[in-house]
Each structure stands twice: as C-alpha cells, then as structure tokens.
Length: 61
Image (cartoon, rainbow, N blue to C red; front, side):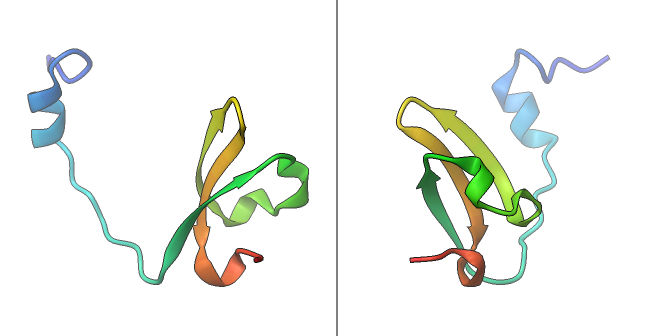
C-alpha cells in the first residue's frame, strides 16, 4: 500500500506529468456559464471568482 495521500515526497515521485501542446492562460471569471467548460483544463473556485486554465486561443480578451 502506498502513502501518497500524506507523504508529499512519495506523491511527487509517483507523478508522471505530460506536457500538453499549445499555449495556455490562467483567467478569472465571475460567471462560469459564460464559458464552454469542455475547453477548460482545470478550475479553482476562489473568493474573487473562478480561475480557469484554458488554451490561449480559446480565451477572450
């Protein structure tokens, strides 16, 4: 049995990160219904809104 849940060193050793092609941006949105959530890589719910990671060409300025 592994101890990944409580041992950060073991968790990091067991990771196998993969680099996605393309450029990505972090963006904070107040209303997630304004975005196509199929395009987000991940989301963080914060006090000031929801921060998303999305492909740069999908992010609107």
